[in-house]
Image 1 (tube, rainbow, N blue to C red):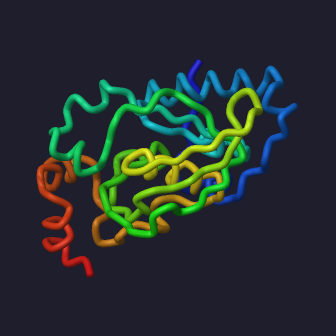
Image 2: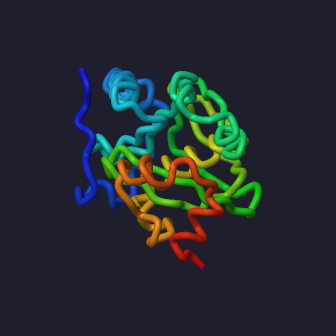
Length: 196
């Protein structure tokens, strides 16, 4: 059973989510939610899905960047993004700190803003303390695309969307991105769109 992914404008997407206790995490309803979120994310397809996106204000997100998602992306773009497959995992009650303050901008989409993308500056590396799907403490040190996914999903848990961080002049439909900009280097896009 797939869950409905809410679109921008829904109040739950703009509210901070509540933390879960270890007891909550191990409960059958939360375990079922994790499995349903996994199925929904894979079906979309997406690389991350936060509980607020399915209408639940909980500090929980699922992440997975499958190899099959990389097949249509040129090797030089994968390298520039430092993008590699990420196995499925769950982050609960995450606390994010920036490990490398240098930022890089790449196009980002969101399952709650279907059909649109924008250039979003994000930190190159992050450190995340959280709990996993068993309620056990976890530490994640990530860089590149994985760091971007973590920042994006943790933003959702705090009521923030990429709209709040994007270079506004780069906001466009996914179709126009594919048609006009996908093959260009970010620096070229930045210059052609007149971004500061």
